[in-house]
Image (cartoon, rainbow, N blue to C red; front, side, top):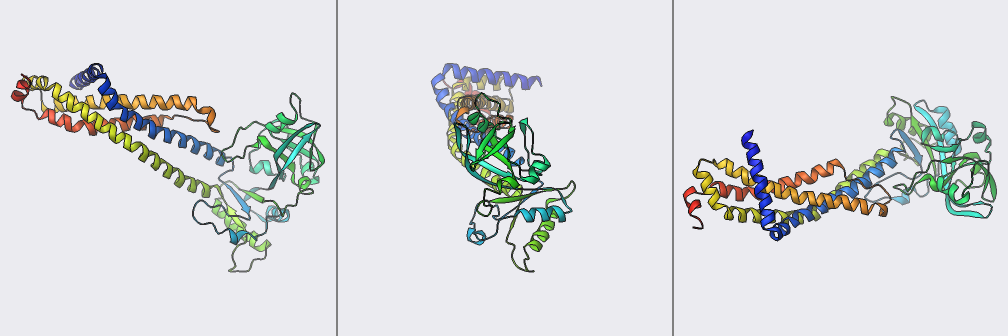
Length: 414
C-alpha cells in the first residue's frame, strides 16, 4: 500500500512538473482529450436529457393503457398509410359498449381534439387545443388541477357548457384575474370555467396542457363533427391484468362491434406506449453512436498527444530512470510510475472537458425546451474514457522506460 501511495505521489508530481515546465506543449497535447470529451459528453448530455424528458412525457400516458384508434403507432421504416386511411374513427357508442362488456379494464374513456380560437371579452387566443373528454378521462390520464375542480358526472353526462383551461390560456384570457366562474367563448358558445390546470411547460411532443381546454365530450361533440377529427378510446387495465390480456379482450370486443368476419383484417389499431419506447431506444442508440464517432477522432488525436508527452518525458528523465534502476527499482515500479503519470495528464484533460460541458449546460439551458442535466453517469463515462486513453497512450512509453538498461540510461546525455 505504501509503495502504491509513493508511486501515485511521484507520478502526480512529475505530471505537475511536466505541465509547469512545458505549459504550451502540454496544453496543446491535452487539447485533443478535452475536445473529445467535450464532444462525446455534450452529445450524451443533450440526448440523455431529451430522452429523459420524452420518457417522462410518455410515462404520463401510462404503460398499462391501450389506445384504440384508427391509425397504428409505428417508429421508422415504411408506413402503409393508404391501408389505414379509410378506416372508421373510434366512436362514443363503441366506448360505451367496451365499458359494458370489458372485464379486464379498470376505466374506459374517450377523447377527441381539434383547435379553435378562445375568447373572453376583448381577449383572445388562437390555436387553442380543444379536447372533448368523457367522464372517466381523469381515471385513465393524469389531470392536475391547480384551481377549481373536475367535471361532475352530471356535467359530463348532460353535456353541460363547462370548461377546464390550461395555465397559458388562463394567463392570456384572464390577465390579473381569477378565471373561475367566468365564461369563455368557443364555437360561438359560452362555457363556464370551473378549473385551471397546473402549469406544465413545453412538452417534448408539443403536447403541453398549458394551451389546452377540456370540455365534456357530450358538450363538445354537439359542435364538432367527430368523424373529421382524430378520436381515441383509452382503456386502462385492471391491476394484475397484462396489456396482452387486455389487448386480446379488446380485439374480440371491437371485432364483434364492427362485425368483422373471421380471418378478415382488423380495421382498428390497439396501440400501447411500449411501441414508442422501442422506437425511441433505437433512435437514441443511433444518435449516441454518432456522438461517439464525432468525439472519437478528437480522442484519438488526444491519445497521440498523451503518448508524445510521455515519450518526451521518458527521454528527459532517462538519467533518473537509470539511477532508480541502479539502486534497485523494479521494472514494474518504473512502468507504473509512467502509467500513473499518463493517466493523471489524461484525466486532467477530461476534467477540463467536463467542466466545459457543465458551463455549456448552464449557459444554453434557456435555448432548450427541456432541462439539460450533466448526470453523474456521464461524468463517470468522461472520467472513465480519460483514464482508458491515459492507460493505452502511456503504456508503450512506460514499457520502453521500464526496459531501459540502467548503465546506458545513466550515461545518456553525459
